[in-house]
Image (cartoon, rainbow, N blue to C red; front, side):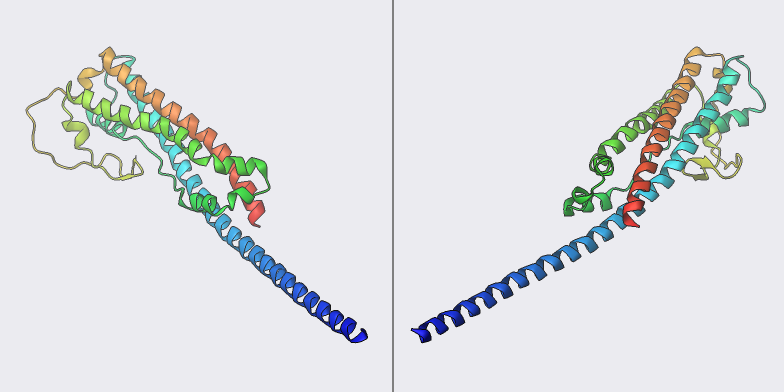
Length: 246
């Protein structure tokens, strides 16, 4: 009887050892998976942070260039307010050439999508930051809505203008732009001669022309204000994400 009891104890001890070993192995695996998950999250968050910082730089350009559009439109409106050309016609051509362009941001979102799919964003403890990042593409869409409208209206203005005056002057301004802004001050290039002499200055007393410029200014203002508001949100996200990553 004592022998049976001893064997039972041995088997129980052996079973306990095996159970503890299995539990320990599971614990080690879980710990290691957790370590790998944390490391992967840090990699994803670092990529998202860099992506948001890139977006911030693009947004700085957007704010500057929307303000540039408004300033150029205001310079034309000063002339339409009196119906008279101020300075040489080439100066007006340069202003109109600038208004043919409209900045449209192309914000990267690949890193954020990867982080979302991996579950990294869902594991963020800061609820405000998590909500911002999970809704980020919707915020980008709101920003782009104004910029797309501005781009389409600039294209509409170009077509409208081409039906009422010669675009020879504005088109001769050499297009050396950094994100839509002139580098050289009204450098020009030769175009084939045109027999149509009705330049942009002939429209300065035209209410419809002034209305077109007013619309471009309004689009620039809307895009500028939306970009400024988005920049504030972006700064919050960058600050909070930087605190987590650090």
